[in-house]
Length: 415
Ligand code: 7TS
Image (cartoon, rainbow, N blue to C red; front, side, top):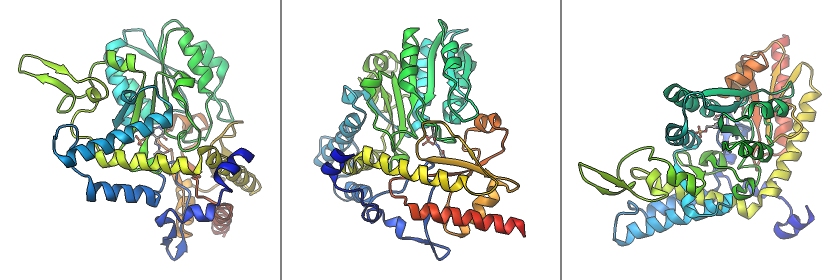
């Protein structure tokens, strides 16, 4: 921590909150307590200004125009691609494909890589704690190819059962698609170990990094993963933009996912040849300003230092876990030894939606429901949980407000 402090100074959360205009809003006359960062994080002024500046001063369609503004817009978008490459430590800019979000990134790999590589009986390995967006695309490709889906289980704490996972990786495994951090439980998955085991049998690995990149520095070369996806909006950037990283050799061998403008080299009615990477996978006009906004978000995170953000959130999660555990009748769902920024729980006798509604009246935004991870809910025999998910601007005081809100819920349901 000392080296980090020396580089960036102390982590001044009050000052950092000032970077996020929306945090000054009031909700039902109460200060906003935003604890739904796992769904979408709020945007710092640096991102909002970058979006505004892009529309006001450097907006035109990209990659096709010879005119000045088109060049400016193209440069801005390609500079964002370089920022993403640095952020993930990818080897090449063209290994970064801009997509709509993690969902589209996974669909792209499942459809393009899956159709080209999966045969009947080939196995796709998932885990119980995948978000639906890392389940459904694989089921769709399974149904088209005759591949088989296997599922690695989790234990009562919400940790992956590694011995079972190791047993499920075998000579028929072609793809292992796992989340880096569970959105419903907060579990940090030991992906380096999984990647090693998968590669030992020649399988490819896709990591769903949606819930990881806002909290954990990622180095795709050190990890040696084949694909890594994330969404901009959970990383303090805009919605409608996300990233698929893929190793160049794999992406080059994959057929296009969608056809259209931007992704071609030449077109006749007889035959079309495709553009090289990354454009082969970016059909149509992209979310130009979204990419610029994502680049600004990555720069902003870099200015704070991801390890410092992680340390702050870790401390907050430990504090929140301790305070909630001390409350009567609260059950914390997800107690894996390694967790990031997510606290899921239930309260005996009260439906999560009622808890969410009462907290909302106190200005506290949490998420309630199955969190698009129904297999996790089934595993714990629950219809839903309440989820508080922390971001770089949350404070201990906000945790105290959450605890007071929960006491209020208990009071209402006792009377
Ligand atoms: N993977 C994980 C682990 C996620 O948490 C989410 C979104 C997705 C994929 C899909 O991301 P998208 O940007 O393409 O929609 N998770 C959540 C959530 O936990 N609450 O709302 C969205």
